[in-house]
Image (cartoon, rainbow, N blue to C red; front, side, top):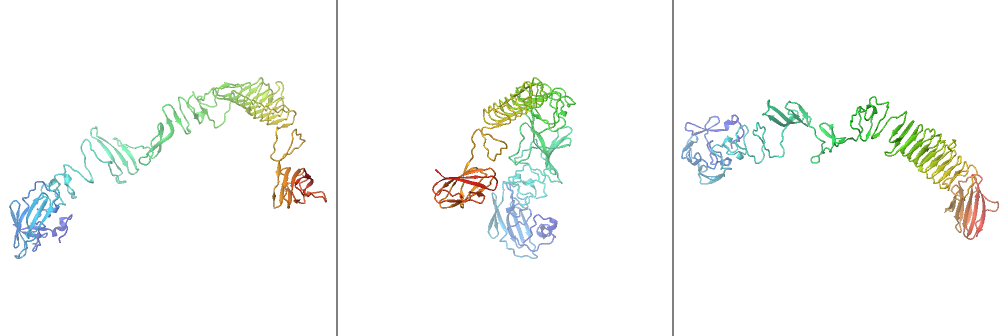
Length: 633
């Protein structure tokens, strides 16, 4: 079997080629020019290169096929083959065998017929075989194709839609190209026309960093003078898009924040954009709605200019204010004159004033701070070092006042020749008359008064409550409650209602509930009763534990037929403890040695169901003295 020479160069395979030679072209020689002395000929192969090697490879044939050059009949006489073409001409081939031999022509082609795209061949032995040619209606001439897989010239294809494979190295020219599947072009030299329509989703261009750093779309403006060009390019080294102007200058294309495809992040309406790094921008903290520019984060800088004012808080250093309508002209501080702040002022350092400092509306004199709610008035008059903060507070005196302050709503300080170091906090509270270091904290409608002519009311306080009063006295106080009055020196009313002091150095309490212990250092007069809680003792493992620090009154239910050990603890000097014992049957009790009883007459519970009372008295912290009363009925 011969070699497959497809794709090989003639210079490398010429020895394997067969040539027709001789003056009558009646000899076959190999690639070296030597005669071929023997040849096994089969009818399935054409003996001339001008014919298709096999009809199965003819890919293109025209609808009107010229069969003049096709073999019609053939005959063999000894070693001479005679062929008759379709146009009636004949040619003979002599097989050089060295001597005349008898040739079996049974496998040689005798006749052939064509029907549409099918060619039927008849051999010398009478057998036939058929070959069907693809696209037979479009081949201009079948004699051109030496092999269906290697078209020698693309000019013979009537339309490009029929060219399925084109051999490398050829330079065909096409009028039209239609690709039904896919096509790949290594390089397109030029596309002309006013517009090119590409029916695909994407146009893919290639970059290969660093050899081919840029790829993109270039615009060639041939109508400009001079001719100019610009481009949109992908910089594969920095992974970003750039534009190149006709001047040759380039710039980076700015994009929004990155996100996943279909869920991209958009800029917010009215938000000023800021750089996020690389070529991205995103929302800043500044909003411009066409009327106001709003900053949601602090502004840091040495100069801020606003010709129409600020709305909201302005934090910073006031010495950098540049507009006289909002701050004094340079130098801004120390400040002399008036300044109006329509918003709020936050001072991280200190503020001092040699005159009055007014925030809001109201009247003032001397050294004051007057801060009021919008629409209301605080009044400060003839006061030194006064503060009024809130709504409708009044500091107004006949004489002098020092270090006074009113905080809250409708509080009044005044009407004295010397009223100083007083503080009012709350609602509708009043301090009047001469006096100093007085205070009302919280509550409402509380009043402190003093003598209008002498300094007799000082160092007193009302803490909370309603309608409480302190009269002309020293060191008095009312702590919460309603309508209580303290008018004696060093006296205090705590809680309750409608209580008035009757003596100096006295504390008045309507009810006193002490959850812990109470110690009275002097004599105590109780106008009501005093009582203690009553606790029931329980028995565990025949023992009843008596905690003397818990209460003064206890009860104990004995168990018939059992002895109960009563064990006192936490004994304190000066205690009197009463224990009611509920007796039953033959129950008995016993005590530790710390309980002292009458010699020879220890307490024995009543042997019937009844009630005994056992009393313990302590004079120290180590023992209790016991007495009892039995069988109470």
